[in-house]
Image 1: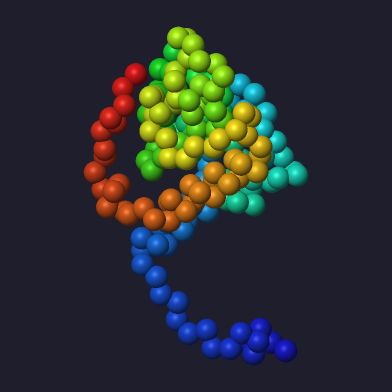
Image 2: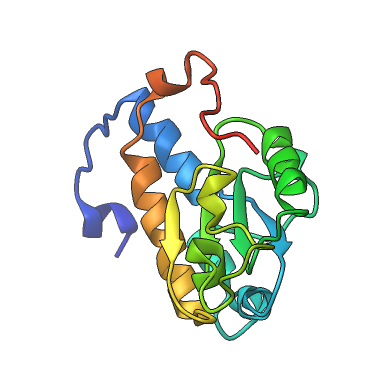
Length: 169
C-alpha cells in the first residue's frame, strides 16, 4: 500500500510567515556554554548520550557568542564576572535568549554574600529560570522546552527596531 493511499488527500497546508519563522527559531537553538560552577556539570550531562539535548533542537554548545542565540548561565556570577557576562551577551546576534540555570544564577542560592551578583537578571534579561541546586538535566531540558514555547508566541514586529537594554552593570 502506498503512502498516498494511507494518508489520503492532504490538501494545502497554510501558515503565516511569523509562525514559520518562530517554528524554525524554536527548533534550531544554538546555546552558548557559560558554566561557572557545579551547575555546569549538569548542563554538560544534558548534552551527553543519556539525555541528548540535541533531540529537543538545542544542538551543540558553542563557545563563541557570535554563533549563539541562547546563553545558559549555569552557576554563581561574581561581581568581577558580571561585566564579562554582559559583554558576551551584547556580542550575541538578535534575537537572543537567556536561561538562568540553578539557584545561584537565579538568586545566589546558599552563597549570599557581597562578592556575588544577587541573580543574573541584574546583568542580563532572563527568559527562563531553572530551579534546583544543582538542577537535574531533565530540569534544563524542561527549561529549553519552555523557552521554545515562548519563542513560538513571539511577534516579528518585536525585532523590527533594536531595543535598548534596560539593565546596566
